[in-house]
Amino acid sequence: MFCFQCQETAGNTGCTRKGVCGKTDQVSNLQDLLVDSLRTLAVFALEFSDDALAEEDVDVHIIKGLFVTVTNVNFDASRIREYIRDTRKKRDVLRKTLIESHGPEYVDRLDMRLPDPYPSDSDAEQMDLQSEGSTVLRDEDEDIRSLKELLLYGLKGIAAYADHASVLGNKNNEIFMFTKKALAATTDKNAGADMLLDLVMECGSTAVSTMVLLDQANTGAYGHPEPTRVELGVRNNPGILISGHDLKDLEELLEQTSGKGVDVYTHGEMLPAQSYPAFKKYDHFAGNYGGSWYLQGKEFASFNGPILMTTNCLVPPKDTYRDRLFTTGLVGFENVQHIPDREAGKPKDFSRIVEMAAGCDAPEQLEEGQIPAGFAHNAVISMADTVIEAVKNGSIRQFVVMAGCDGRMPSRKYFEDVAGGLPGDTVILTAGCAKYRYNKLQLGDIDGIPRVLDAGQCNDSYSLVKIALALKDAFGLDDINQLPIAYDIAWYEQKAVTVLLALLSLGVKGIRLGPTLPAFVSPGVLNVLVEKFDIKPTTTPGADINEMLDLAEDKR
Ligand code: FSO
Ligand code: SF4
Image (cartoon, rainbow, N blue to C red; front, side):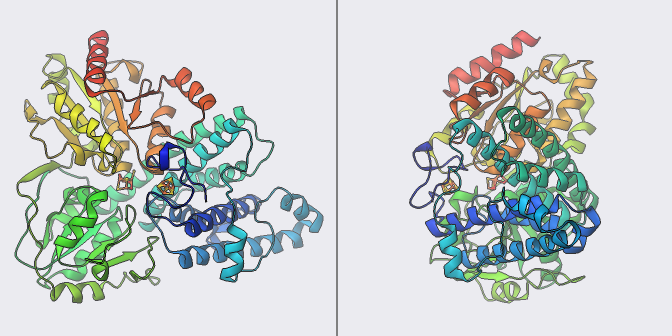
Protein backbone atom coordinates (compact mmCIF):
# COMPACT_ATOMS: atom_id res chain seq x y z
CA MET A 1 0.00 0.00 0.00
CA PHE A 2 0.94 3.62 -0.33
CA CYS A 3 -1.41 6.29 0.93
CA PHE A 4 -0.70 9.92 1.74
CA GLN A 5 -4.15 11.39 1.30
CA CYS A 6 -4.64 12.70 4.84
CA GLN A 7 -2.77 14.93 7.26
CA GLU A 8 -1.88 12.09 9.61
CA THR A 9 0.03 10.08 6.99
CA ALA A 10 3.00 8.26 8.54
CA GLY A 11 6.04 10.51 8.97
CA ASN A 12 4.25 13.09 6.82
CA THR A 13 5.41 11.09 3.79
CA GLY A 14 3.08 8.09 3.35
CA CYS A 15 1.50 5.08 5.08
CA THR A 16 3.11 1.96 3.65
CA ARG A 17 2.37 -0.95 6.00
CA LYS A 18 -0.86 0.04 7.73
CA GLY A 19 -2.71 3.32 7.88
CA VAL A 20 -2.38 5.52 10.93
CA CYS A 21 -6.18 5.66 10.51
CA GLY A 22 -6.33 1.88 10.96
CA LYS A 23 -6.81 1.06 7.27
CA THR A 24 -5.13 -2.26 6.40
CA ASP A 25 -2.81 -2.79 3.49
CA GLN A 26 -5.52 -4.88 1.79
CA VAL A 27 -8.23 -2.24 2.21
CA SER A 28 -5.94 0.52 1.01
CA ASN A 29 -5.05 -1.43 -2.15
CA LEU A 30 -8.70 -2.28 -2.79
CA GLN A 31 -9.62 1.40 -2.43
CA ASP A 32 -6.99 2.23 -5.06
CA LEU A 33 -8.46 -0.45 -7.34
CA LEU A 34 -11.91 1.03 -6.77
CA VAL A 35 -10.62 4.47 -7.76
CA ASP A 36 -9.09 2.95 -10.92
CA SER A 37 -12.36 1.24 -11.81
CA LEU A 38 -14.19 4.54 -11.28
CA ARG A 39 -11.67 6.33 -13.53
CA THR A 40 -12.36 3.75 -16.22
CA LEU A 41 -16.10 4.09 -15.79
CA ALA A 42 -15.73 7.88 -16.03
CA VAL A 43 -13.90 7.64 -19.37
CA PHE A 44 -16.68 5.49 -20.83
CA ALA A 45 -19.38 7.62 -19.24
CA LEU A 46 -18.05 10.75 -20.96
CA GLU A 47 -19.19 9.15 -24.24
CA PHE A 48 -22.85 9.09 -23.14
CA SER A 49 -25.65 11.60 -22.66
CA ASP A 50 -26.89 12.54 -19.18
CA ASP A 51 -30.13 10.66 -19.83
CA ALA A 52 -28.39 7.41 -20.73
CA LEU A 53 -26.25 7.66 -17.60
CA ALA A 54 -29.22 8.47 -15.38
CA GLU A 55 -30.80 5.21 -16.48
CA GLU A 56 -27.81 3.26 -15.17
CA ASP A 57 -27.36 5.61 -12.19
CA VAL A 58 -23.72 6.01 -13.25
CA ASP A 59 -23.09 9.52 -11.89
CA VAL A 60 -24.45 8.81 -8.43
CA HIS A 61 -22.47 5.57 -8.41
CA ILE A 62 -19.24 7.45 -9.21
CA ILE A 63 -19.69 9.94 -6.38
CA LYS A 64 -20.60 7.20 -3.91
CA GLY A 65 -17.59 5.17 -4.99
CA LEU A 66 -15.26 8.12 -4.44
CA PHE A 67 -16.84 8.91 -1.07
CA VAL A 68 -16.15 5.31 0.03
CA THR A 69 -12.42 5.99 -0.33
CA VAL A 70 -12.37 9.17 1.80
CA THR A 71 -10.37 8.77 5.02
CA ASN A 72 -12.24 7.06 7.87
CA VAL A 73 -15.31 6.08 5.85
CA ASN A 74 -15.03 2.41 4.93
CA PHE A 75 -12.60 -0.15 6.33
CA ASP A 76 -14.49 -3.24 5.12
CA ALA A 77 -12.72 -5.15 2.31
CA SER A 78 -15.82 -7.12 1.32
CA ARG A 79 -17.91 -3.94 0.89
CA ILE A 80 -15.17 -2.31 -1.20
CA ARG A 81 -14.98 -5.40 -3.43
CA GLU A 82 -18.76 -5.06 -3.90
CA TYR A 83 -18.32 -1.45 -5.05
CA ILE A 84 -15.61 -2.57 -7.50
CA ARG A 85 -17.90 -5.30 -8.86
CA ASP A 86 -20.76 -2.83 -9.32
CA THR A 87 -18.47 -0.31 -10.98
CA ARG A 88 -17.20 -2.94 -13.41
CA LYS A 89 -20.74 -4.06 -14.19
CA LYS A 90 -21.72 -0.50 -15.09
CA ARG A 91 -18.54 -0.12 -17.13
CA ASP A 92 -19.31 -3.33 -19.03
CA VAL A 93 -22.82 -2.13 -19.90
CA LEU A 94 -21.46 1.16 -21.27
CA ARG A 95 -18.59 -0.57 -23.06
CA LYS A 96 -20.93 -3.02 -24.78
CA THR A 97 -23.27 -0.22 -25.89
CA LEU A 98 -20.31 1.71 -27.23
CA ILE A 99 -19.01 -1.28 -29.21
CA GLU A 100 -22.47 -1.61 -30.76
CA SER A 101 -22.70 2.07 -31.66
CA HIS A 102 -19.08 2.93 -32.56
CA GLY A 103 -17.42 -0.41 -33.33
CA PRO A 104 -14.69 -2.36 -31.52
CA GLU A 105 -11.73 -0.28 -32.83
CA TYR A 106 -13.14 2.86 -31.23
CA VAL A 107 -13.45 1.10 -27.89
CA ASP A 108 -9.98 -0.44 -28.27
CA ARG A 109 -8.53 3.07 -28.49
CA LEU A 110 -10.30 4.05 -25.25
CA ASP A 111 -9.19 0.84 -23.54
CA MET A 112 -5.56 1.64 -24.25
CA ARG A 113 -5.53 4.55 -21.82
CA LEU A 114 -7.50 2.93 -19.03
CA PRO A 115 -6.25 1.49 -15.74
CA ASP A 116 -9.07 -1.09 -15.41
CA PRO A 117 -10.33 -1.62 -18.97
CA TYR A 118 -11.63 -5.18 -19.38
CA PRO A 119 -14.24 -7.36 -17.78
CA SER A 120 -12.15 -9.00 -15.11
CA ASP A 121 -12.47 -11.74 -12.59
CA SER A 122 -14.50 -10.50 -9.64
CA ASP A 123 -13.65 -13.36 -7.36
CA ALA A 124 -12.37 -11.91 -4.05
CA GLU A 125 -8.94 -13.53 -4.25
CA GLN A 126 -8.41 -12.40 -7.83
CA MET A 127 -9.47 -8.90 -6.95
CA ASP A 128 -7.01 -8.75 -4.08
CA LEU A 129 -4.26 -9.87 -6.46
CA GLN A 130 -5.27 -7.25 -9.03
CA SER A 131 -5.13 -4.57 -6.35
CA GLU A 132 -1.59 -5.35 -5.24
CA GLY A 133 1.02 -2.67 -5.73
CA SER A 134 0.61 1.04 -5.34
CA THR A 135 -1.19 3.01 -8.03
CA VAL A 136 -0.58 6.32 -6.30
CA LEU A 137 3.08 6.39 -7.27
CA ARG A 138 2.38 5.33 -10.86
CA ASP A 139 3.32 8.70 -12.37
CA GLU A 140 7.06 9.16 -12.19
CA ASP A 141 7.11 12.94 -12.44
CA GLU A 142 6.44 14.07 -8.86
CA ASP A 143 4.73 17.31 -9.84
CA ILE A 144 2.34 15.56 -12.21
CA ARG A 145 1.64 12.93 -9.56
CA SER A 146 1.10 15.66 -6.99
CA LEU A 147 -1.34 17.57 -9.20
CA LYS A 148 -3.27 14.41 -10.07
CA GLU A 149 -3.58 13.45 -6.40
CA LEU A 150 -4.55 17.00 -5.41
CA LEU A 151 -7.25 16.85 -8.08
CA LEU A 152 -8.40 13.38 -6.97
CA TYR A 153 -8.65 14.41 -3.30
CA GLY A 154 -10.55 17.56 -4.27
CA LEU A 155 -12.93 15.30 -6.21
CA LYS A 156 -13.38 12.99 -3.23
CA GLY A 157 -14.56 15.93 -1.13
CA ILE A 158 -16.86 17.13 -3.91
CA ALA A 159 -18.22 13.58 -4.13
CA ALA A 160 -18.99 13.54 -0.41
CA TYR A 161 -20.89 16.84 -0.56
CA ALA A 162 -22.66 15.91 -3.82
CA ASP A 163 -23.73 12.62 -2.26
CA HIS A 164 -25.27 14.36 0.76
CA ALA A 165 -27.14 16.68 -1.59
CA SER A 166 -28.28 13.77 -3.78
CA VAL A 167 -29.63 11.87 -0.76
CA LEU A 168 -31.92 14.89 -0.28
CA GLY A 169 -32.91 14.83 -3.97
CA ASN A 170 -30.66 17.70 -5.14
CA LYS A 171 -28.41 16.78 -8.07
CA ASN A 172 -26.50 18.85 -10.56
CA ASN A 173 -25.27 17.55 -13.91
CA GLU A 174 -22.45 20.10 -14.18
CA ILE A 175 -20.94 18.73 -10.98
CA PHE A 176 -21.27 15.17 -12.28
CA MET A 177 -19.76 16.21 -15.62
CA PHE A 178 -16.76 17.87 -14.00
CA THR A 179 -16.20 14.83 -11.78
CA LYS A 180 -16.06 12.53 -14.81
CA LYS A 181 -13.89 14.89 -16.83
CA ALA A 182 -11.40 15.38 -14.01
CA LEU A 183 -11.31 11.69 -13.08
CA ALA A 184 -10.67 10.85 -16.73
CA ALA A 185 -7.84 13.40 -16.83
CA THR A 186 -6.10 11.57 -13.99
CA THR A 187 -5.77 8.54 -16.33
CA ASP A 188 -4.11 10.64 -19.02
CA LYS A 189 -0.42 9.78 -19.27
CA ASN A 190 0.17 12.88 -21.40
CA ALA A 191 -1.56 15.33 -19.06
CA GLY A 192 0.76 18.30 -18.52
CA ALA A 193 1.14 20.45 -15.41
CA ASP A 194 -0.71 23.45 -16.89
CA MET A 195 -3.75 21.41 -17.85
CA LEU A 196 -3.83 19.71 -14.45
CA LEU A 197 -3.45 23.01 -12.63
CA ASP A 198 -6.39 24.42 -14.60
CA LEU A 199 -8.44 21.40 -13.57
CA VAL A 200 -7.40 21.87 -9.93
CA MET A 201 -8.73 25.45 -10.11
CA GLU A 202 -11.92 24.27 -11.79
CA CYS A 203 -12.19 21.70 -9.00
CA GLY A 204 -12.22 24.66 -6.58
CA SER A 205 -15.02 26.45 -8.41
CA THR A 206 -16.97 23.18 -8.71
CA ALA A 207 -16.44 22.72 -4.97
CA VAL A 208 -18.14 26.08 -4.42
CA SER A 209 -21.10 25.02 -6.60
CA THR A 210 -21.33 21.74 -4.72
CA MET A 211 -21.38 23.46 -1.35
CA VAL A 212 -24.09 25.80 -2.67
CA LEU A 213 -26.09 22.76 -3.82
CA LEU A 214 -25.73 21.08 -0.44
CA ASP A 215 -26.62 24.28 1.40
CA GLN A 216 -29.78 24.53 -0.71
CA ALA A 217 -30.57 20.87 -0.04
CA ASN A 218 -30.08 21.17 3.73
CA THR A 219 -31.83 24.48 4.24
CA GLY A 220 -34.61 23.51 1.78
CA ALA A 221 -35.33 20.35 3.73
CA TYR A 222 -34.69 21.48 7.31
CA GLY A 223 -34.82 25.30 7.35
CA HIS A 224 -32.03 27.79 8.02
CA PRO A 225 -29.87 27.05 11.07
CA GLU A 226 -30.65 29.49 13.85
CA PRO A 227 -28.48 30.56 16.79
CA THR A 228 -28.90 27.84 19.40
CA ARG A 229 -27.35 27.04 22.77
CA VAL A 230 -26.52 23.35 22.64
CA GLU A 231 -26.62 21.30 25.85
CA LEU A 232 -23.48 19.34 26.71
CA GLY A 233 -24.97 17.43 29.65
CA VAL A 234 -27.11 14.28 29.56
CA ARG A 235 -30.66 13.32 30.51
CA ASN A 236 -31.94 10.26 32.40
CA ASN A 237 -33.33 8.23 29.48
CA PRO A 238 -31.32 5.77 27.42
CA GLY A 239 -29.88 7.44 24.35
CA ILE A 240 -28.79 6.87 20.76
CA LEU A 241 -25.70 8.73 19.59
CA ILE A 242 -25.59 9.77 15.93
CA SER A 243 -22.34 10.87 14.31
CA GLY A 244 -21.12 11.80 10.83
CA HIS A 245 -22.71 14.33 8.49
CA ASP A 246 -25.89 12.78 7.07
CA LEU A 247 -28.94 14.85 8.02
CA LYS A 248 -31.44 12.56 6.27
CA ASP A 249 -30.37 9.70 8.55
CA LEU A 250 -30.89 11.97 11.55
CA GLU A 251 -34.34 12.99 10.36
CA GLU A 252 -35.44 9.36 9.99
CA LEU A 253 -33.89 8.34 13.30
CA LEU A 254 -35.70 11.17 15.12
CA GLU A 255 -38.99 10.11 13.55
CA GLN A 256 -38.50 6.45 14.48
CA THR A 257 -37.55 7.24 18.09
CA SER A 258 -40.43 9.62 18.72
CA GLY A 259 -42.44 8.56 21.78
CA LYS A 260 -40.16 5.58 22.51
CA GLY A 261 -38.60 6.88 25.75
CA VAL A 262 -35.22 7.10 24.05
CA ASP A 263 -33.26 10.33 23.49
CA VAL A 264 -31.10 11.14 20.47
CA TYR A 265 -27.74 12.88 20.99
CA THR A 266 -25.40 14.30 18.36
CA HIS A 267 -21.71 13.57 18.17
CA GLY A 268 -18.83 15.12 16.23
CA GLU A 269 -19.88 16.69 12.95
CA MET A 270 -23.58 16.06 13.68
CA LEU A 271 -23.48 18.88 16.28
CA PRO A 272 -24.64 21.53 13.74
CA ALA A 273 -27.91 19.59 13.30
CA GLN A 274 -28.88 21.00 16.71
CA SER A 275 -29.54 24.37 15.04
CA TYR A 276 -31.96 23.31 12.28
CA PRO A 277 -35.60 24.22 13.02
CA ALA A 278 -36.86 20.89 11.63
CA PHE A 279 -34.87 18.92 14.22
CA LYS A 280 -35.28 21.27 17.17
CA LYS A 281 -38.99 20.51 17.26
CA TYR A 282 -38.37 16.97 18.62
CA ASP A 283 -38.52 16.90 22.43
CA HIS A 284 -36.34 13.81 22.58
CA PHE A 285 -33.56 15.49 20.57
CA ALA A 286 -31.09 15.88 23.43
CA GLY A 287 -27.71 17.64 23.41
CA ASN A 288 -24.29 16.98 21.97
CA TYR A 289 -22.15 14.27 23.53
CA GLY A 290 -18.36 14.41 23.58
CA GLY A 291 -15.75 16.08 21.43
CA SER A 292 -14.28 15.49 18.02
CA TRP A 293 -13.99 12.23 16.13
CA TYR A 294 -10.63 10.98 17.34
CA LEU A 295 -11.86 10.82 20.96
CA GLN A 296 -14.59 8.27 20.14
CA GLY A 297 -12.65 5.32 21.63
CA LYS A 298 -13.35 6.68 25.12
CA GLU A 299 -16.56 8.59 24.56
CA PHE A 300 -18.49 5.81 22.81
CA ALA A 301 -17.70 3.50 25.75
CA SER A 302 -19.24 5.86 28.31
CA PHE A 303 -22.27 6.65 26.17
CA ASN A 304 -23.79 3.26 27.11
CA GLY A 305 -26.32 3.18 24.26
CA PRO A 306 -26.11 2.42 20.54
CA ILE A 307 -24.07 4.63 18.23
CA LEU A 308 -24.90 5.24 14.56
CA MET A 309 -22.05 6.32 12.27
CA THR A 310 -23.50 7.88 9.12
CA THR A 311 -20.26 9.05 7.44
CA ASN A 312 -16.66 9.70 8.42
CA CYS A 313 -14.91 9.92 10.82
CA LEU A 314 -14.99 6.31 12.08
CA VAL A 315 -12.01 4.91 13.96
CA PRO A 316 -11.45 1.16 14.43
CA PRO A 317 -13.91 0.26 17.21
CA LYS A 318 -12.91 -0.95 20.65
CA ASP A 319 -14.51 -4.03 22.22
CA THR A 320 -16.03 -1.79 24.93
CA TYR A 321 -18.68 -0.59 22.45
CA ARG A 322 -18.25 -2.60 19.23
CA ASP A 323 -21.53 -4.47 19.72
CA ARG A 324 -23.35 -1.14 20.21
CA LEU A 325 -21.86 0.42 17.08
CA PHE A 326 -23.84 0.55 13.80
CA THR A 327 -22.72 1.82 10.43
CA THR A 328 -24.97 2.96 7.61
CA GLY A 329 -24.67 4.40 4.10
CA LEU A 330 -21.13 4.24 2.76
CA VAL A 331 -19.53 3.61 6.14
CA GLY A 332 -18.27 0.14 6.90
CA PHE A 333 -16.14 -1.87 9.26
CA GLU A 334 -15.79 -5.64 9.34
CA ASN A 335 -18.04 -7.34 11.92
CA VAL A 336 -19.86 -4.13 12.79
CA GLN A 337 -23.64 -4.18 12.27
CA HIS A 338 -24.76 -2.29 9.16
CA ILE A 339 -28.15 -0.65 8.56
CA PRO A 340 -29.03 -1.21 4.89
CA ASP A 341 -29.91 1.53 2.41
CA ARG A 342 -33.43 2.80 1.87
CA GLU A 343 -35.73 0.81 -0.36
CA ALA A 344 -37.44 2.98 -2.95
CA GLY A 345 -39.84 5.41 -1.28
CA LYS A 346 -39.22 4.06 2.23
CA PRO A 347 -37.08 5.34 5.12
CA LYS A 348 -34.15 3.34 6.48
CA ASP A 349 -35.15 0.85 9.13
CA PHE A 350 -33.49 1.82 12.42
CA SER A 351 -35.69 -0.47 14.54
CA ARG A 352 -32.72 -2.64 15.62
CA ILE A 353 -31.02 0.42 17.07
CA VAL A 354 -34.16 1.68 18.76
CA GLU A 355 -34.81 -1.73 20.36
CA MET A 356 -31.24 -1.98 21.60
CA ALA A 357 -31.38 1.53 23.08
CA ALA A 358 -34.48 0.73 25.13
CA GLY A 359 -32.50 -1.86 27.11
CA CYS A 360 -29.41 0.33 27.71
CA ASP A 361 -28.40 2.55 30.60
CA ALA A 362 -28.55 6.33 30.19
CA PRO A 363 -25.28 7.94 29.03
CA GLU A 364 -22.63 8.77 31.60
CA GLN A 365 -22.24 12.55 31.85
CA LEU A 366 -18.94 13.84 30.45
CA GLU A 367 -19.40 17.58 30.76
CA GLU A 368 -22.03 20.21 31.42
CA GLY A 369 -23.02 23.64 30.20
CA GLN A 370 -23.95 24.88 26.77
CA ILE A 371 -22.17 25.99 23.61
CA PRO A 372 -23.44 28.38 20.94
CA ALA A 373 -24.02 27.04 17.43
CA GLY A 374 -26.08 27.88 14.36
CA PHE A 375 -24.22 30.88 12.95
CA ALA A 376 -24.57 29.93 9.29
CA HIS A 377 -24.94 32.62 6.60
CA ASN A 378 -28.61 33.37 7.11
CA ALA A 379 -28.20 33.99 10.85
CA VAL A 380 -25.02 36.07 10.51
CA ILE A 381 -26.28 38.10 7.56
CA SER A 382 -29.47 38.88 9.47
CA MET A 383 -27.32 40.58 12.12
CA ALA A 384 -25.13 42.24 9.47
CA ASP A 385 -25.86 45.77 10.72
CA THR A 386 -24.49 44.97 14.19
CA VAL A 387 -21.44 43.25 12.69
CA ILE A 388 -20.71 46.11 10.25
CA GLU A 389 -21.13 48.70 13.00
CA ALA A 390 -18.75 46.75 15.26
CA VAL A 391 -16.12 46.69 12.49
CA LYS A 392 -16.61 50.40 11.76
CA ASN A 393 -16.34 51.50 15.38
CA GLY A 394 -13.33 49.27 15.96
CA SER A 395 -14.96 46.82 18.43
CA ILE A 396 -14.10 44.09 15.92
CA ARG A 397 -10.54 44.49 14.68
CA GLN A 398 -10.18 41.25 12.78
CA PHE A 399 -12.03 38.06 11.77
CA VAL A 400 -10.07 34.84 11.70
CA VAL A 401 -11.45 31.93 9.68
CA MET A 402 -10.40 28.80 11.57
CA ALA A 403 -12.45 26.23 9.67
CA GLY A 404 -11.44 22.65 8.91
CA CYS A 405 -10.77 19.50 10.85
CA ASP A 406 -9.54 18.25 14.16
CA GLY A 407 -7.21 15.30 14.55
CA ARG A 408 -5.04 13.26 16.88
CA MET A 409 -1.74 15.07 16.58
CA PRO A 410 -0.65 16.91 19.73
CA SER A 411 0.59 19.73 17.46
CA ARG A 412 -3.08 20.62 16.90
CA LYS A 413 -2.98 22.32 20.28
CA TYR A 414 -1.69 25.19 18.12
CA PHE A 415 -5.30 25.91 17.10
CA GLU A 416 -6.51 25.99 20.69
CA ASP A 417 -3.66 28.33 21.56
CA VAL A 418 -4.37 30.64 18.63
CA ALA A 419 -8.07 30.80 19.54
CA GLY A 420 -7.28 31.41 23.20
CA GLY A 421 -4.49 33.90 22.40
CA LEU A 422 -6.37 36.10 19.94
CA PRO A 423 -7.28 39.42 21.59
CA GLY A 424 -10.86 40.19 22.66
CA ASP A 425 -11.56 42.37 19.62
CA THR A 426 -11.28 39.47 17.18
CA VAL A 427 -13.99 37.06 16.00
CA ILE A 428 -13.35 33.46 14.97
CA LEU A 429 -15.41 32.13 12.07
CA THR A 430 -15.46 28.35 12.10
CA ALA A 431 -16.96 25.28 10.42
CA GLY A 432 -16.04 21.60 10.52
CA CYS A 433 -14.76 19.62 13.47
CA ALA A 434 -11.75 21.96 13.95
CA LYS A 435 -14.07 23.90 16.29
CA TYR A 436 -13.74 21.29 19.04
CA ARG A 437 -10.30 22.73 19.80
CA TYR A 438 -11.86 25.98 21.04
CA ASN A 439 -15.67 25.96 21.05
CA LYS A 440 -15.78 25.15 24.75
CA LEU A 441 -13.36 27.92 25.75
CA GLN A 442 -15.14 30.85 27.33
CA LEU A 443 -14.14 33.50 24.78
CA GLY A 444 -17.05 35.88 25.43
CA ASP A 445 -18.75 38.15 22.92
CA ILE A 446 -18.47 41.55 21.28
CA ASP A 447 -21.62 43.69 21.48
CA GLY A 448 -23.64 40.45 21.72
CA ILE A 449 -21.78 38.76 18.84
CA PRO A 450 -20.14 35.53 20.12
CA ARG A 451 -16.39 35.53 19.54
CA VAL A 452 -16.68 32.05 18.00
CA LEU A 453 -19.25 32.01 15.22
CA ASP A 454 -19.84 28.38 14.31
CA ALA A 455 -21.36 28.06 10.83
CA GLY A 456 -21.77 24.27 11.01
CA GLN A 457 -20.24 21.26 9.27
CA CYS A 458 -17.14 21.41 7.07
CA ASN A 459 -19.33 21.95 3.97
CA ASP A 460 -20.86 24.96 5.74
CA SER A 461 -17.54 26.71 5.07
CA TYR A 462 -19.68 27.94 2.18
CA SER A 463 -21.48 30.06 4.79
CA LEU A 464 -18.17 31.67 5.73
CA VAL A 465 -17.59 32.56 2.08
CA LYS A 466 -21.09 33.97 1.82
CA ILE A 467 -20.55 36.07 4.94
CA ALA A 468 -17.21 37.34 3.58
CA LEU A 469 -18.79 38.29 0.26
CA ALA A 470 -21.64 40.10 2.04
CA LEU A 471 -19.10 42.06 4.11
CA LYS A 472 -17.11 42.91 0.96
CA ASP A 473 -20.27 44.36 -0.62
CA ALA A 474 -21.27 46.19 2.56
CA PHE A 475 -17.86 47.89 2.74
CA GLY A 476 -17.84 48.62 -1.00
CA LEU A 477 -14.57 46.74 -1.58
CA ASP A 478 -13.58 45.17 -4.90
CA ASP A 479 -11.48 42.37 -3.52
CA ILE A 480 -12.24 39.83 -0.80
CA ASN A 481 -8.59 40.12 0.32
CA GLN A 482 -9.15 43.75 1.39
CA LEU A 483 -11.43 42.58 4.21
CA PRO A 484 -10.08 42.32 7.77
CA ILE A 485 -10.19 38.51 7.56
CA ALA A 486 -7.25 36.15 8.10
CA TYR A 487 -7.38 32.42 7.32
CA ASP A 488 -5.87 29.84 9.68
CA ILE A 489 -7.15 26.52 8.37
CA ALA A 490 -6.78 23.10 10.02
CA TRP A 491 -6.92 20.22 7.57
CA TYR A 492 -7.17 16.48 8.02
CA GLU A 493 -9.02 14.66 5.28
CA GLN A 494 -10.01 15.21 1.67
CA LYS A 495 -13.10 17.36 2.28
CA ALA A 496 -10.79 19.95 3.79
CA VAL A 497 -8.73 19.82 0.57
CA THR A 498 -11.95 20.56 -1.31
CA VAL A 499 -12.74 23.51 0.97
CA LEU A 500 -9.19 24.83 0.50
CA LEU A 501 -9.51 24.63 -3.30
CA ALA A 502 -12.88 26.39 -3.05
CA LEU A 503 -11.28 29.29 -1.16
CA LEU A 504 -8.42 29.50 -3.69
CA SER A 505 -10.86 29.55 -6.60
CA LEU A 506 -12.55 32.56 -4.98
CA GLY A 507 -9.20 34.35 -4.97
CA VAL A 508 -8.53 34.18 -1.22
CA LYS A 509 -4.83 34.80 -0.57
CA GLY A 510 -2.51 34.27 2.38
CA ILE A 511 -4.16 31.15 3.83
CA ARG A 512 -2.24 29.50 6.67
CA LEU A 513 -2.53 25.73 6.62
CA GLY A 514 -1.66 23.33 9.39
CA PRO A 515 -0.66 21.54 11.44
CA THR A 516 1.50 20.31 8.52
CA LEU A 517 1.42 20.94 4.80
CA PRO A 518 0.03 18.04 2.72
CA ALA A 519 2.59 15.32 1.97
CA PHE A 520 1.07 14.92 -1.50
CA VAL A 521 1.97 18.48 -2.48
CA SER A 522 5.38 18.31 -4.14
CA PRO A 523 7.91 21.15 -3.69
CA GLY A 524 7.22 22.23 -7.29
CA VAL A 525 3.44 22.40 -6.80
CA LEU A 526 3.90 24.11 -3.44
CA ASN A 527 5.97 26.81 -5.16
CA VAL A 528 3.12 27.48 -7.55
CA LEU A 529 0.61 27.67 -4.67
CA VAL A 530 2.88 30.04 -2.77
CA GLU A 531 3.46 32.27 -5.80
CA LYS A 532 -0.18 32.39 -6.89
CA PHE A 533 -1.93 32.34 -3.51
CA ASP A 534 0.66 33.10 -0.84
CA ILE A 535 -0.21 29.85 0.99
CA LYS A 536 1.88 29.39 4.12
CA PRO A 537 2.33 26.82 6.87
CA THR A 538 1.24 27.51 10.42
CA THR A 539 4.24 28.36 12.64
CA THR A 540 3.80 29.20 16.33
CA PRO A 541 0.60 30.62 17.83
CA GLY A 542 2.36 33.80 18.99
CA ALA A 543 4.08 34.56 15.68
CA ASP A 544 0.98 33.76 13.62
CA ILE A 545 -1.33 35.85 15.83
CA ASN A 546 1.04 38.81 15.54
CA GLU A 547 1.26 38.49 11.80
CA MET A 548 -2.54 38.23 11.47
CA LEU A 549 -3.04 41.32 13.62
CA ASP A 550 -0.39 43.29 11.68
CA LEU A 551 -2.30 42.40 8.55
CA ALA A 552 -5.47 43.82 10.11
CA GLU A 553 -3.61 47.09 10.84
CA ASP A 554 -2.39 47.29 7.23
CA LYS A 555 -5.94 46.92 5.95
CA ARG A 556 -7.40 49.67 8.16
FE1 FSO B 1 -14.26 16.45 10.59
FE2 FSO B 1 -13.92 13.93 9.88
FE3 FSO B 1 -16.39 17.23 8.62
FE4 FSO B 1 -13.96 15.73 7.93
S1 FSO B 1 -15.44 14.71 11.28
S2 FSO B 1 -12.58 15.53 9.63
S3 FSO B 1 -13.19 17.57 6.88
O1 FSO B 1 -14.66 14.03 8.26
O2 FSO B 1 -15.67 16.12 7.32
O3 FSO B 1 -14.99 18.04 9.67
FE1 SF4 C 1 -2.49 6.91 6.16
FE2 SF4 C 1 -4.28 8.85 6.09
FE3 SF4 C 1 -4.12 7.10 4.10
FE4 SF4 C 1 -5.09 6.39 6.50
S1 SF4 C 1 -5.99 7.84 5.03
S2 SF4 C 1 -3.66 5.23 5.22
S3 SF4 C 1 -3.76 7.60 7.86
S4 SF4 C 1 -2.58 8.60 4.69
